[in-house]
Image (tube, rainbow, N blue to C red; front, side, top):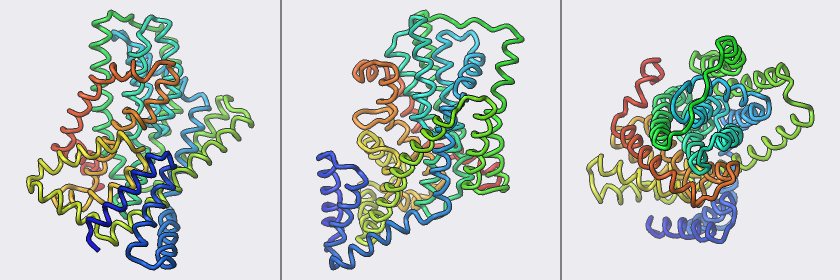
Length: 433
C-alpha cells in the first residue's frame, strides 16, 4: 500500500474526529489504530499500538514534566507571582506605559520559573490587568501585551516543552535545549516591549512613580529567593549536578519551602494544587502516550519519508524548505496545542532538517517558537483564551491589538530560522553541543 494512501487515511481521520469535537488524545489513538489496521491483522495492530503507547511514557526523563507542572502551580499559589510583579514594576522604571512593561517583565520572570505560558497569563495578567484598568489603559491593549508575552516562558527554562521534544527525538540534550532558549526568549520579550512602548507613548499612558530607595531594596530582597530557583535548578542541570528530572524534584521542594516561608499556602490550597497538577499531568502524559503510537505508525508506513520527498520535490533550496516548514508549523499552531504538535510533527520534520544540516537543538527552538505564536492565535490558542478571560475582553477586540505582535514575532522567527547562532551560541559556549 502506498505511503500517500496511508498518510491520507491517517490525517483525514484525525482531522475529521477533531472536527467532531473528540478529544485530541482519543483522536490520535483512533486515527493511528485505523491506519495500522490497513497493514496488520487486528490483534497485532491493537497489541503493537498499546505497546507503543506504554513505551512512550516509560521514561525517567518524562517524570520531569509532572514535577515542573507541580512546581509551577505551587508558584502560582505560593505568593511568588506577587513578588515578581513588584520586581518587574521596579525594573520597568519610568518607561511610558510602565505597567504594560511590568506585565512583560513579570511574564518573563514568572514564565522562566514556572515554564508555563498559561500559568503566567493567569497569574501575572490577572493582577496587571486590574492595575492597568485603574490607570486608564485600554483593556484590549493590556490583554494583548499579556497574551503576547506569556509564551516567553515556553522558551526560557525550565520548560516542559523542551523536555517533551527531547524525549520524542530520543536523546537531544535537555541542557543544550534549555540554554538554547534564552536568546530567542529574550528577543521575544524585547520585541513585545518595543511595540508596547510605541503604543503607550502614542496614547500617552502614565508612568509609574519611582519608589523610595528603602522600598526598592526591600522589593529586590523579597524577590531574590524566588529568582534563586533559576540558579539552583538550571545551574544544577547544566553543571551536571543532577538530571532534568532530579532538577524538577528540586524545584518542587524549593517552591514548597518558599511557600512555607511566605506562609501563603494552606493545607487546602496545597491539596488543590496537587489535584490540579495531577489532572494536567495526566492529560499531557496521555497525549505523549497516544502520540508515541502515532509516531510508530507514521514510521512503519513511511509517512515522514514520503512527506520529506514531497517537500524536496517542491524545491531543494534549504531556504524554501525552511520557509515552507515554518508556514506549516504556524498553521498547525492555529489548530493544535503545543504538546501534540511537538509530538506529531517532530518525527516528520526532524529528518528533513537534519538532512539539510540543521542542528536538532536549533530545530527544537524553531519548533517551540512557532508553537509560542500558535498559543496566541484562535481558535485553539490556550494563552489567548486565558488572557482574554482574566481581562474580561472579547477575542475579537484583542485580536486586532495582537496583529503588530504577530508581525514582529514572525520577523524574529525568521531571524532564528536563518541565524543558527542565535540559538546555538550559548550552549556551544558552555560546551553542551
